[in-house]
Length: 506
Image (cartoon, rainbow, N blue to C red; front, side, top):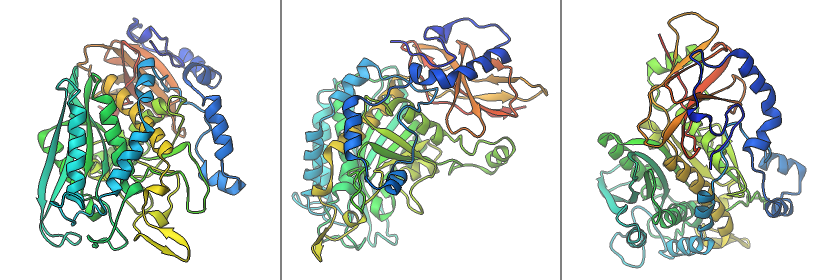
């Protein structure tokens, strides 16, 4: 079914437009109506059942409520939001809470999954976990009609501070090859290694239920559900190793893609997404944090100079990816609110998306709303009557299933929609109070056209959407000095791509 956004007719993606583009009166009229029309046209508030659950489980202390739920309310939907399609709802309905629980408990049962633990013991250690994940992924791939393949992606890491001897690092990678745009790739991962209090302790129990069997369970469950479906673009479901010792598995994977010239247009790591309960017992069971950097990690000096001149600190490809997740996954189909955090990761910390960012790929990190540090990076022990350790009993498997739905909504929509427009530019050869944008036409066979979006420079979300038609050029009668512009693609099913932030072209 076609989708509609403020300032954009549902059938208008390929409608003809005049050569002038969009005049100032049209733009400003659309702007005036957005605040009123945004919810009715693009938003989907939480269902009554979810709303009741939220009320029942909300933190009771007012200052804790403010701290735990600082993101926008449910009805505050961006102008770029996309309604979940019946196909997407059906897919999300297949995500199985009990399977997720079984995965987490099985991974925890290997005792420790420390990177330096045994690689050949069939019952305990990282090798046993690797082999089990590989076998499960192969089982999912068997029903894909050949579209999904599974591999062990390995290399030997030479000694570094947290790896004292040469050690084999192995990622388990399931690839669902796209049928229409196979060269465009999206990645979801969790790390299957674990640790105790001492990061070098490869012997003690380190069940790693929340950190990060929960993230691996999300990647595996999505692989299971999507294996039976035909994706337009390629989706990769990965369980990576070596995270606790230094992000080694993810770095190897990202470098492999970079060396091969793979067009990774989005990567998500799910790391510590197992519980909505904070260390003080307060709960926020319908929120997931999404960390997304502003200034790109891979920014060159030339790009930095341009950014300082024209702005865009809040418009990196990763920020556009995060906005897209809100557009498609913050709704009643997932039952979740996506709280985008404008940081690369938590304060002075990092995860497996960073090696992808370092190599120029858009990437972001999902993490539970408030961590309980008694249940991560801790020896399994009882001290003064308090249980420590990252045990399955402290996970909320219904919550993990909802996080899986957020990931599923984002990944499936990314893969079925057109790719992010390439070559987006604002022409600056002549001084004018209008703004002319150009971009390259995508190669998708179902491409219908493009939309121009814009917002005030102080606004965090895109607030206006203007149809541009099936063209590679559009002029808006607004000054580039005063607002930020972007371009997104639309296909015949009405699915929109992430926004491309244009660079200046003289």
